[in-house]
Amino acid sequence: MTIASTLRLSLYGVALSAISTLGLIGCSNSSTDTAATTENSSAADVEKPAKSIAITQIVEHPSLDDMRRGIIDELADNGYVEGQNLTVNFQSAQGNTATAGQIAKQFAGDNPDAIVAISTPSAQSIVAATTTIPIIYTAVSDPLGAKLINEDGKPFQSNLTGLSSQLPLEPQLDLLQQIKPDMKTIGYVYSPGEANSVSLRDSLKQALPARGLTLLDIPANRPTDIGMATRSLQGRADIIYTSFDNNVASAFEAMTQAANELKLPIVASDEFSVKRGAAAALGVNDYDFGRTTGKMVYRVLNGEAINTIEPAVMNDLTLYISPKHAKTQGVSLPAELLKNGINVDEQAQSTDNK
Image (cartoon, rainbow, N blue to C red; front, side, top):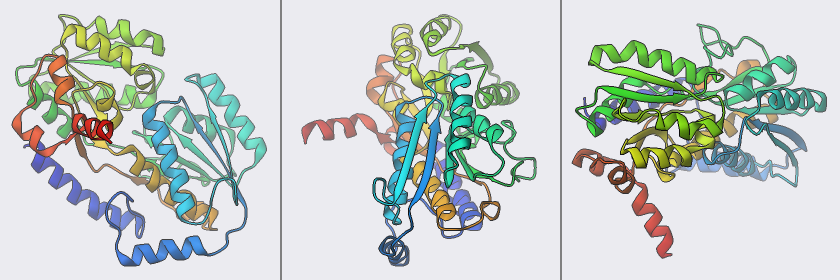
């Protein structure tokens, strides 16, 4: 199956899923119909009571930061404006899980109207700290593996809901093989302390043999280990795949520098990774992910009981490409990808010319 047909099927399936799961909730990057515009205008025009939210993420990097920006913008468009009737307490754990636990305890003591946990480690810490304050998780790729929901998709705690990014694996593998048709081994640098990264490793190991491929997984416990771990792939892997690993994202420039030297193309699953050095990515738009999460937060602030807001999945796929980075990493992107992908090189050039 080609990437283009995969995108069409995936988007169609997600559209049906989103209608049944989120109802009126939808992504905010596309053109909005008249009814939605009227709804947003009415929500913003009604004077809202003062509310407070706490937001935490395991580390600051462009992908998670853009999700946070989307959340704040969505709330503002619906009448909750930071600095006016909305107090936002944001804290980053700076990549430290012990710090994430401390932040969670502080937030539980502060008792805000809602807590937003961006990333798996932050969500796990917050869930352990309170069973009463509404929690909305986001940027969690495997909420089941993270023990946030059960096999029926229901939260383990009644004060919990959220938005996950369970990207289908097969289209990712299709993309890898389109970029490097002769590949035999995929290099995967990951954080053994992140449940989402371990889960993806296990899924890759199960899926690759059917394609005649193998996985070379290299653990990296800290962002400072990423460059060395990537260099250890020299002569042993044909391509690098990474997805939603916060250590890798924090030190992505170290990974790309090593990959450039080794002529190993990087395939990721978010827009910012391509802007920062990956050859391509098939994944979610981070800002839209934040906007959709913000709709959930708004419902809580607007008085809905959190146990009536079901967890949802946002897995519509957007293809991002960088012919420039691909060339630096020793490959030329196929014509189909050039035709169907969003070229971040052209975006950057357009911005520079303004």
